Amino acid sequence: MSSRVASAPELLAVTVMPGPQMVAAIPLCRAFKAKYPSVPVVWGGYFPSLYPDASLNANYVDFVVRGQGEHTFTELLAATRAGGGYEKVRGISFKDRFGLHVHNPERPMQSPGDFPWFHLSPARSGAVHPAHIPRFAHYGAPVQHRMSVPVQLLWSGPGVRS
Image (cartoon, rainbow, N blue to C red; front, top):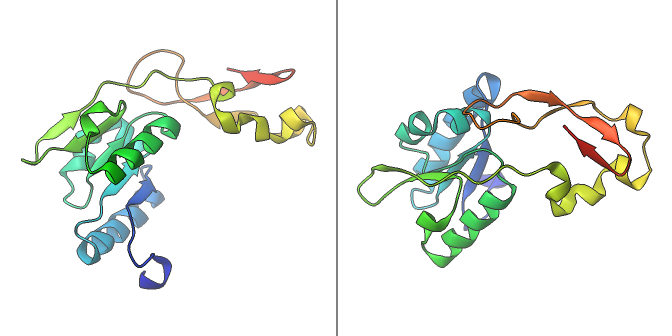
């Protein structure tokens, strides 16, 4: 692991889903935390979004990014660099100074077209015909509940809709 880690890492962020990703994430995060005990470990993805308490019960996980992480993660990184202010970051769960779990309010869900990187989509640029791009994406459910589900994305000209 040492050859792949910066000399002074800011944090370790891992996407975790049940199954092979979790099987790989647990020993990696344990080893990382043993070597860098003061560096925060962040879990995001399907499993920690559904089970933030179970994720935070692991002594090697400091933060959970719940739901869409594009804006949440950048705000968490900014708070980490500032040395605190985690209670202001929507969509995270974390351990307070006593080790208690804190679950901040949810961040509202956004459409893929609302993200600044969406313009880089091969279909939007015309480089790839929409029929040749994946038609399914793991994006989340159109209603507010704790389960994320795959939804079909339908091409609608310059953007996509679910």
